[in-house]
Amino acid sequence: MKTKLLKTDNHKPARLFFAVQPANTIQKQLGNLAKKLAIEWGGRCIKPDNIHLTLLFLGETKMDKIDLLRTAVTNITGKRFDLTIQKTRFWKRNQIIYAHADTYPPELFSLVDAIKNTLRDAGFKFDDRAYKPHITLVRKTTLYPPPETLQPIEWPVKEWLLMQSKQTDQGIRYIILDRWQLH
Image (cartoon, rainbow, N blue to C red):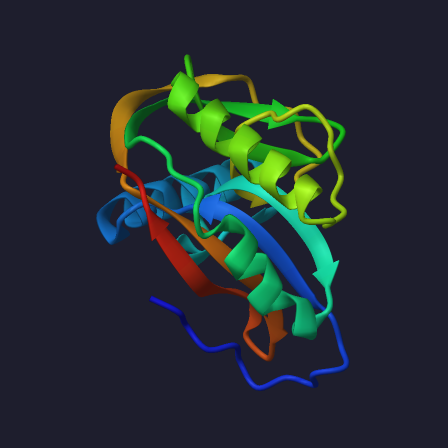
């Protein structure tokens, strides 16, 4: 299912990334946690609709390359997997509080590797650093919250997405441009 881009200037690049996004109920749970943490530790909580786990950040991509990008990843197959979110942690360098799993399934890393390899072969450029999965909940916090153990949040991952980060009058909004099912 392709989703249309928001009205935009075709000459301006779009900020794109691949991600997985939880169902609305899990987004609300994590959104409530983000609100609580921002109140306790300062910073700006992520809106529930924007909560996701980034697979690969592409950054600024020319609008006329989006169809080529979609075509390049169309044949990637991946297996469904489950995430169990159990902790929050603080990342000092990035000034974020994030949700974290004790372990991440190999299917997640296989999907990330498949996306990276496919895009590299198709000639796309991206920051190819080591993948460190995390779910940002609060940005711009300068206090140092201790790790917190949570009541486990079960997140079944059934699809992956191509998303655009778009600045709007209401702040940053993440728009789904395309989605692919995991099997």
